[in-house]
Amino acid sequence: MRIGIGYDSHILVEGRKLVLGGVEIHFEKGLVSHSDGDVLCHAIIDAIIGALGEGDIGRHFPDSDERFKGASSIILLKQTVDMACSKGFGISWIDSVIITERPKIGPYISDMKQKLSEAGISASLVNIKAKTNEGMGFVGRGEGIAAQAVCLLVQNQFK
Image (cartoon, rainbow, N blue to C red; front, side, top):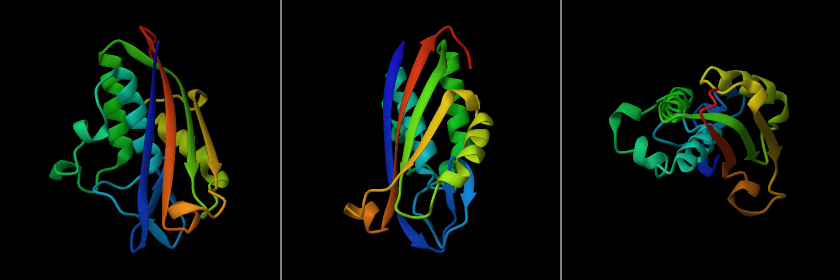
């Protein structure tokens, strides 16, 4: 077994779509990023890559590479899941948390789990929680959104 942890955060701005867990969230702001800014997918990607001992998301999907400009993070996650499988590992469990004051995430969690399954992670193997930051820091002031994820990989067990 291998365990990895992932984290991501981005600034909220007007004029961008808000995408979390591959789902477009109805909100007046979106996240600034080279790709679609999906902090949940980015945290999960980072956790999987960490469990593989392969560095971090920036090593595999650098923001200096134009191929990833505006990219769907679900596609990047699918590539990461495929990488784990090619190395003989399957995802046994993902636990994650999205940290934001607004918008409320609870109503979207089921759709996020379904969307993550399109990337090769069974919805039954993912837990997504939504938390606020109780008004503290950049998240608490509504300036951005953060996410954390932990991944358990098991050798020779496939998604």
